Length: 434
View 1 (cartoon, helix red, strand yellow):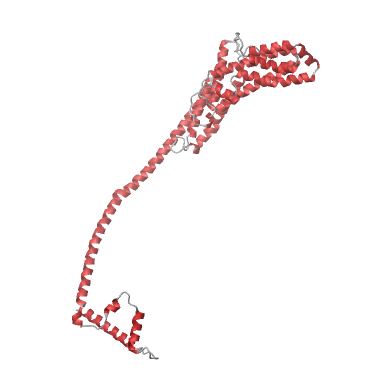
View 2 (tube, one colour; view 1 turned 90 degrees about the vertical axis):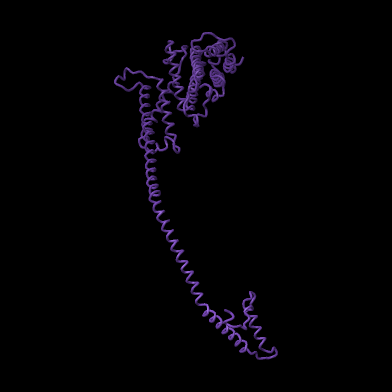
């Protein structure tokens, strides 16, 4: 192709050089066609050379294009035909893929969407069933609790007057109440009571049955503990007079203790502390009055002994009663529960090793200032106390020893409770002087 076009004088290597610079090439043309000493520079000659070279290159390109037109067109046609065949094959494959996807969409995706809708419906139905079962269980337990509360109060039925209160039903009702509370508190994800708080019927059950029942049980148990009396030393409307009555009192008190322990162990400790404080307050007041009127001292000390005997009986009852087993081991209300007996939390709260010892020492602590006030006032009372100090001393000692015995127990252990007797005697004799 180059031979048919003839040789060319144009130096193509110069123009194809990667380092070719148009500025340097133009400068070399100007210098080659002009004398450096000439003042006017002739630019027409180098410009004519550049134009002639461009015309020569254009002519060469035209000649090559004309001679190679048929091969170029043939090559272009071959490339276009090959591209058309490729596009045809690709379109066929794309059509097959489209058909496959449509079939897959119909057989898999649509069925999956339908199955997913069914799954959602089943999940919602199952959730509804779970809520319905939980509500039904709560209502059943609520009805059971109402029946047990009727047994506690002796109400219900056609023959109300013939019914008798069943204190054992207090424990059963407490267990039922705890079961409902546990169900309602299990409100975590996938727990049985997850959505019960949103059910209006459950809210009504809580307000009309659960809360009133818990309040009634708590008040009833606290009342039984407040009225606890086992000693027969002093006349009391609640003191038992026969063995059967004593056993009934123990059984009723045990039910009250277990009820408070089930509802809240702190309530039990608080109720027992209230009982002890009431005994201490009444004893301190009565002994203070008796020291003002010595003829009533023996009778008053007998009543104090009776109160301490009740505390001794209560201590034995607590020591023989184990904490009930129920499902609130993980709550904060169980923080004070011990694994031994019901006596241990009370002793820990009072920081003592014995309830009778706590009673006598606390009574002595409050009695000393009262005797000191009587002596400071002087008069007939002070002189009577000093003149009968030995009688008062023996009476106080006998009060402590007698009150530290169990109700109905006439035997005394040698040396027992002598320290408490000494503390009580010291609280009375100390202010009297010698």
